[in-house]
Structure formats: structure tokens, C-alpha cells
Amino acid sequence: MAVTKKLVEDLEGIVGSKYVMDQDFAQYAYGAAGIFFMNTMMEVSDRSAPPEVIVKPRTTEEVSEIMKLANETKTPVTIRGGGEGYWIGGSKDRGIMIDMTDMKKFIEYDEVSRTARAQAGITWGTLNEELEKYGVGTGNYGTHGLLGACVAGSLNADSPGPGGGKYGMPGENVTNLEVVLPTGEIVRTGSLLNEESKFNFRYCNGPDLAGMFIGSGGIYGIMTEVWLKTRPLYEHSETVGYSYPDFDTAVHAVNEIQSDGYLTEYAVVPPAGIVEDLLGAMFGKGRPLTLVVTESHSETIEEAQKAEIDKIAKKYDGRLVGLGGLLDALGFGLYDRHEFLGGNMLGLLGPNATAAVTCSIQPLLTAPEVMEAEFAVCRKYEDSYAYSRLLGGKVWLGALIAAGELGAAYAPTVFSFDPSNDESRKTAYRVVHELLEVKWRTGYATQFSNTREWETPHVVRRYDPQSLELMKKIKETLDPNNILNRDFVIPTSPYEKVDKIIAEMESEEVKK
Ligand SMILES: Cc1cc2nc3c(=O)[nH]c(=O)nc-3n(C[C@H](O)[C@H](O)[C@H](O)COP(=O)(O)OP(=O)(O)OC[C@H]3O[C@@H](n4cnc5c(N)ncnc54)[C@H](O)[C@@H]3O)c2cc1C
Image 1: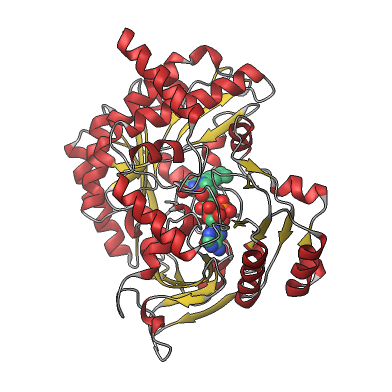
Image 2: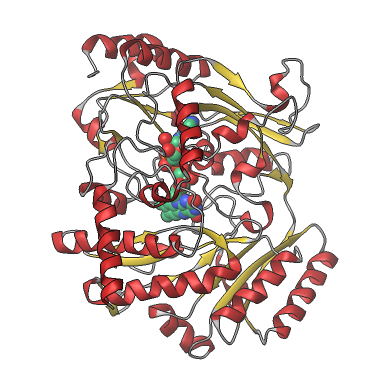
């Protein structure tokens, strides 16, 4: 149902008029994505539209009241955290958008459970600033999304990020959740199923209900509070750089360093495109660069870890490079709990054009296969790519593997195109889906199953029908009016444009 004046007034009655916006500039702003590139993707799409009204709750009870009202009036609701994920705007049926960024209170650090409790719209940066007072941090610092990503946004998008090399995905660090269901009831998970519980633990009191909400793209409920494991803040941490004879060797070396438990974070930069020119000048043509971050609470352990890393690197013919120390000195950390620069590193490859990051989850050892498949697509479209004044040439591809969770890697590709040119925009849409399709063919899995125009069309083609049926049944049970994050994860119509691109790819391959 369209949003009426009465509905806006009722929302104002719940949160106060200051926290409700229905002006056209607000609709427009909330209809856009934090990542500019996604706006371009959605221009080619009919799956999203600006919300009619935006509401900013501050308490769980307010969220619950909003959902009850939305059900009574059958109004679609879209949830927004920091808004910097690879999705955009409201439901195509418009309706209400709930902006969760005012639910940002740090509530407590519990030293018995060693957990942090906060409202779910808190950013990773703010949460970790608060935790510093107790000498702890979240270990995994959410995403490389600079300062804007909220804890619940990352949990719902399954975002991997800094610290993932040691501490896994953000979702693995959740002990408990408080969630408002689509119909407005408030539930808690894990040890907090027992109202008398005195500690925070996930795997107890029955099924792991938290797991159902994590990575769900917000289709099963709205997270209002989160409890996360914490880790000590280590005094000693260093970035160690090595260059290796080739990409495959580099990946095997980092894999061994990781499986021995010596690193918290890593990056493997393959020698390709502009990266090859830059690295070639420093380390010799064709040699990839790896950076690994170590941490420990004593200098003795730190030195011992570095010695072990050096042994492994030498075994793979690795050559120590001083770049890690230089980056540390400049404060340009791969592992940065305030996340100021980490993600931006990717954007630097394509100034004057738009850089896009794409992410995937894949085992580290399969990275060479994925990279090769991606490079083939990028080479095919080389002529369409934008010119970068800073780098003095066409920026066709920079690729980086970073921030993997245990045993897996996160592999964004970066490329540039001209957003003011229609043809270039269409090519960008096509290249993105060809890149995703070739990656999917290597057998990987996705975070971002909520993204509607990005990973979703590819995962949907591959869902086994019975698992999809189960997801749909849970959705129908929890959200009988199908109002919450409609069309996220479980599509309401076929992805014809993407299916067509894939069909054309397949027919080109047959011709070859
Ligand atoms: C420069 C840059 C670097 C990035 N690097 C990374 C990276 O390293 N790794 C990575 O994974 N991503 C990365 N991203 C993407 C983005 O940062 C992540 O997806 C981030 O986790 C999104 O958080 P958010 O708060 O912006 O969530 P949003 O984008 O607002 O929301 C994400 C999803 O969660 C849902 N949601 C939000 N809040 C709630 C809630 N309270 N309850 C239920 N559902 C909710 C939304 O409906 C949506 O489906 C990057 C983005 C940028 C701009």
C-alpha cells in the first residue's frame, strides 16, 4: 500500500516528528546507494525505488511498533544500516525505509563472557573506540568500508573484513542477538533465550537461532541489539611484505603462514595491469607482492612469529621487501580498527573515474583460477575502460586478495569506466555480471546474497530447489504479509537481464 499522510503521522507518533522524513530530497538521498557504482547498476534495473518515508528509531520498542503498523497497513519496509553495501534504495514498491543509524548506543562490556553489547546500528569504529577503554576490540573489524558500516549491516550482508584472516567472519563472532521479527515481536537468541541467563553464549538452549538471521539480508527480522566476542588489543603488530616468483607460489606461501596461525590479516597483490607496472619497478616484473599482518602480546612471541614466517617465505623463494614497515610508518594499515584507509586503497587505483570493488568468498588456493577467469573477461573489455590521468593510462584492472576469513579469501577486482557515458555504463553492467558469472563457475560462495542487482542473480540460478523452498517457508511463516526487505535474497521475479547476458556468454563460448 502507498504511504498515506495518516501513516506518516502514525510513524511520527511512534518516534517523534524529528525522526520521520518524507520530503523529496530525503526520498532521493535514501534511494541512492552509498557505493556510487551501485547506482549505475540499478539504473539498468527495475528492482528498486526511493522510499516514500524514512524513519529513524532509537529503541527496540520503536522498531517493534513500526513493524506492527507496517503490517496493519501492509506497507513494504526496507532496512538500512550504513547504506554502503552493494544494494540500493527501497523496495520497488517503495514504502517505509528504517534507517538504523540512530540505534548506535554502546551498552556494556561484560568481563565474565568477554563480550560487547551494543545497539545494532553502531558502527565498527565507534564500537571499537568504546572497547579500547577495556583494552579489548572485536578482532574482526567489520569491513573495509571505511567508517560508515554498522555492525548489523555487516552481519546481514555476511561481510568479511579486517581481522578475518584470524578471527573469521563477523557472524562467527556473534554470541547473541536481539531481533524484531517482521510482525513486531521481539526475540533473543542463544543463552539469552533464558531470561535469567548471566552470561553470553551462542550454542546452547536449543537451535542456533542467531545463525538464521546472520547473512539473511534482513529478510527474517531487524537486528536491534548485538553481543560480540572481544579479543585483547595486542601491543605488538607488524606488516611484513614478501615478493614471490609467481602468483600461485605466493598464494601457497600465505596459505601455509595462515594455517600455522601466524597472521591476522593478509593481502596478495598479483602482477597484472597497472599493479604489474608499479610492482615491477620495485620488485622485478612478474613478481606478486604479499603483505601479512602479525600481532601478539609480547615482543618475544612477535619476533618468533616473524622468524617462522620468514622460514616459510624462504621455502617458497620469497624475498623480503621493506614495504610493510613503510606502510606501518605511514599509518596505512591493512588491519585498522578505525578503518580509515584500508578500503580506500582500492579506490586509489582509479581516480577521475569510478572504481568499483567486488568481493567474493573463496578458498585461498583457488585464487589463481578465479583471477585468471576474471582477467580473461577484463582483457576482453579492455578498450571500454576509462583513462586515469593519475596513472597515465587505461586502468583495466587491479586486483587484490585481502582480509580472508580462516582458510578463505576475499577477492575484489577494481576497474574503471566512464559513468557519464551511456555505452560505458551498459558495458560496466555487463562486465560486472560476466566477472561474477566466471567466478561462480569456479564453485565459490557469496556474501551479499541480498544485493538484488549484483551477486543475487548468480546465486539464485544455483540454489538447490529444496533449500530455496525452506528459505521461502521460513519467510512466509515469519513475514506473512511479505513486507520486510521484499525481493532481497529471495527474488520476487526472474532476473531476465542477467540471464540474457549469461545466455549470450554461453553462445559465444559454443561458437569458439
Ligand atoms: C570503500 C568500501 C570498502 C568496502 N569494503 C568491504 C569489505 O572489505 N568487505 C565487505 O564485505 N564489504 C565491503 N564494503 C561494502 C560494505 O561496507 C559492507 O557490505 C558493509 O558491511 C555494509 O554495512 P552497512 O551498515 O552499510 O549495511 P547496509 O549496506 O546498510 O545493509 C546491508 C544489508 O543489511 C541489512 N540491514 C542493515 N541493518 C540491519 C539490521 N539492523 N537488521 C537487519 N538487517 C539489516 C540491509 O537491509 C541490507 O540488506 C565496502 C564498501 C565500501 C564503500
